[in-house]
Image (cartoon, rainbow, N blue to C red; front, top):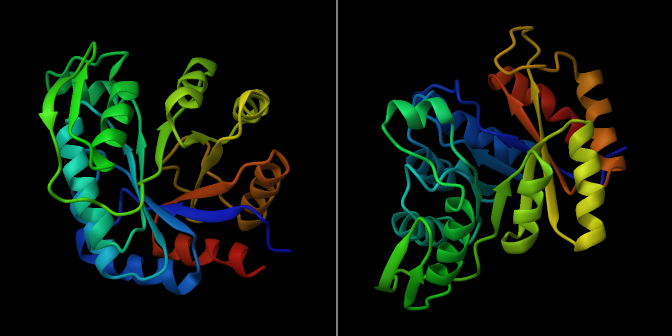
Length: 258
């Protein structure tokens, strides 16, 4: 039985640049709800350019940019990129923000701030609404900036959350939460729903090859189906499959057709 929960994917960070269009066609033809494009230095492509290629080669699947971060992408620059991609994709964009990968930030000489994610969401929401934005925060200070490119409908803004404090922050400023699926995620979602309704998405890694490219990679369709049943029972709105290669992507599509 097809689950009520939406089935999405995260573009494999091992996908070669010259295979992006093949993956894009599979996202649409197989009926996935959304593709999230991770913003990481371990990928053989830049995330926003990859998302643009996917948008150009698809018509139906939603485009999620994330998880990205407000340290390697200044909120003003991110807002302009988001406005452009929202228009280019015909209003299919979502963004997920997180803390960034600590070891990469350190190598780049970037010092993270505990206030940056929340401030970035507030700045993005203001700029993407077309407002002339003044902002004085702990991390970012902006004076009188307005975008020339307006995106149209609002871009949903998610926060990547693990612990309870991150969920609390998301409830205050975000439209949704993206997290890894585990028992703690189920507990945190149940707690969050007692506070206020919020969209929730959970990710699981999957590869039939048996090679773990993520920790605790699921290696059979049967086990993947069970995980999605657990997520659906816990009330999650979206299940995200972090797949390894095109064969895994095509196999995972059987969950949509079941």
